[in-house]
Image 1 (cartoon, rainbow, N blue to C red):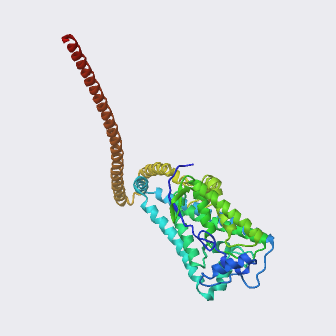
Image 2: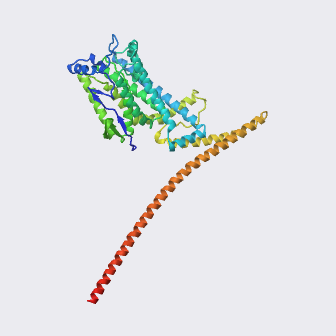
Image 3: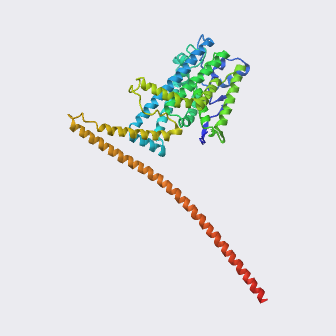
Length: 463
């Protein structure tokens, strides 16, 4: 496992049994029985703005055979999102390879920063947060309550089964619930995007949320629960599971207790044990404050993707899909494209960039060969000459710019090398100087000893 030091803050706040990382189903506590459940419900509802009934009128529990629809929708969501991600990422990679200057900019970005990538990442995360805020705003309108309960709550007794599995991932009706989830999303998204590209990240986020909804539906069907749930906690749990596996040695601290730090692997183990215990408590006592099944499903999906899914996507699924997309005629040409399928991998990013450089060199050689085959333009010879001159000037400018940039990079590497040699030589000089000082002290000590001995002999002779 790669050694990393990523300091992440996980909001953790317990107040009247409410955890900021959880998918809140506390508003559904009115439908549960038991003295303990009623007492806790009253304590929580007294501090909430308003009570809303998300259970649809005349709701009845579906037969368990309908779970196959949810399974099929989950598989279709994963297949669709990851297919779009692989093709979109391939197009972006191919576009960046077409211009050598873009490749050098990418090469320079590896050594001197990732400002452009950070802007794209910030836009993606801002879009996700804005979507959640927009859905939260719709919950504020009482006229949309039935519509929101139908499309944006995930329950096994709902009239719609599949579509709410995805839409409920963006749904929050409580401000604290939404704020906590968006804070955790912003905290863990930067760490996740270090290993995934933005396309793969979005596919992973959506599929993880739908899979968490599927696990929640399975538990609801077996426990015969009519309570729907909502929130992005399932998808966020998938991010947490992925990061804690990929960067298991990273240090995590609690936001209000920064002095307590522990490894991401230990944190994941603790969260898994807690969610599993709470799930069994809810099943056997009929008391459910949070949708622990969705949390557990998201964590398991993130762990599976870090262990197996990511490798399958990058080495098998994406290359085969892109090749089929090209050959079938759905791409730009029906001929097989020789451009290598490069799926973003933060661990192998430098190697893929060098592949881009070699590929661009081949394209430049091909362009030079094409310039020699323009004999059929005899009628437009003047225009052709002008075009060739422009291309030659552009090529010379590009070569000059490329040489200048490569020279700057080489000089910087040489300066680093010279600096290391200077430091090494300085240490050796200091070492030799210390040795000379020690030898001089030893010689002086010996001379003093000899002088003392001579004085002693003289005194003895005088006596």
